[in-house]
Image (tube, rainbow, N blue to C red; front, top):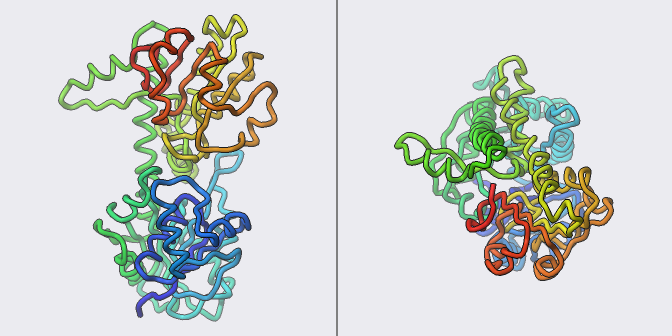
Length: 421
């Protein structure tokens, strides 16, 4: 049976673009979010997040009547769970949002429905969703990974997103999808729905494999970034330009080292490797070490800022960029924020923050003394120390004449003619 109505729970950086793309293909979509302001913004045909071209597709979907937004689920043919899956204080997976979303849809399920977990989850979480639904709806047969061929009324699968912020709409369509089902037909049913917009190949497997695939992708990237950041930790005290080291080493035909940075941010790479560690702590020393290397970079950067001449002389420090990636507004796990938090522990200087994609400082910084959000022009006029933390395009336009008058620490290599790390 063709899916005519999809309910998407979680209208964040993955859920809203997914909902909008499905709606653009003529499918009726109800987006659900627990934040009333988010729902109201979308009802007005506007996205609440910064992502290229998302404003146009959301406006078209809402004005065309194909996308609506609510604070609670409705009856539908398919339910996509795209809610946050953070870790707790002990870096263990916190599935409270996934549990709440699962509980919220339970009463609306009917035989023949499809439930898709798009949230990145630890191995076994999709099966846990099935168990939660079985408890909530004993009148419906749920699929099981232990008996995938057994009869079931509901299909449940895991299809993790594989998109890059700043290119989400493009990659939702073009990237391959890995789809893992709990029941023998669940992955295929999910692929049938996604074929409405996915142009990449769809690779069908079981749910546990799909869960580990997504975690492996981000852990792999984290380990490679950690290698680059560890090289920087070695090179910087020796006065060696680590970016030159990387560029020359990459002249080797089988070497491709990444460039270092201030750390790792975002809800994926900074979080997902811990899900693998939590699954098997005894057999994941490499992944754990990579996480610790990358988590330690903000403190290293803060110490370097504190050691600059103009910092020691009490000069105003300008930190350029808060988001974890260029030209977006996503602050989740951003190393830029951690750099500023660590810097405030070390110095009392006035700190100016420039982030063109936000209107107010996050709570973790707003309560700190002598820190303010300003424009780029204000910071260039007032600061004697410039620290580039996020490579927004606008920062590349700062002139050499201005840079020559400041102490510079460029963690992204945007200003190659200045001191960079």
